[in-house]
Image (cartoon, rainbow, N blue to C red; front, side, top):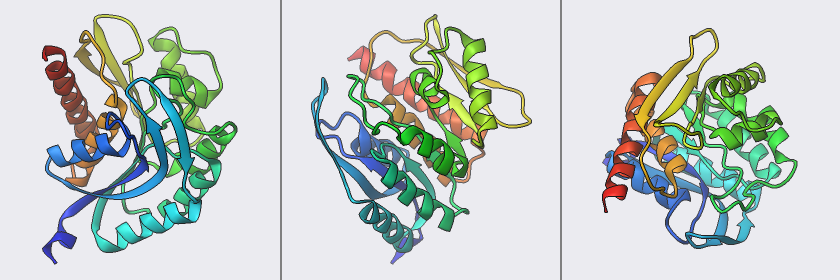
Length: 253
């Protein structure tokens, strides 16, 4: 039973029938860094690379039972959470996280698809902020998700993103990585915010083109490095490098 003793990342999220995002992208990312995965599926989706046609959330108890079974079966060294779909699933996931506070968890707050389809039901953002976000070692919103989480207009510059991030920290988040992929400029800048620490910027050249699932990739890569007992700052730096190299390869093809 050597498998049970190897570090695993528990991936909690929705399926993507196109394979471009969701748990398919998570597994691909974590495996490529050399760590095993275990799963708890929150929702089944029907989608292509262009659109999401159907979303079928699972029963909250079933999501929680999947998580508990994975945690019992394996040495889970980190948890990565993506699409949660409903407020009831958020509450169920939060209960399992509170049972396992020793396992660092990363939240990619998946609120909408690239095509614009809502992936979290209306009204559930408040439940996410209150019940879930304070339980995570790191939350990784992009600029659009950040604005939705604080209930504000989209930040127009880095100062605005910093202020919105500080508002989320004040609401109980342990740490935030604000992703700059939706911003403009020659550099793609991500901002790490932690209480009682100076803001820390992670810069990379902004590449031409686009690729689905980069948010999944980044959060999964960070979780994988945390599973390998790397400090948070190093995990973020290595995760951003992983995504940059994938985007670079995609642009060259």
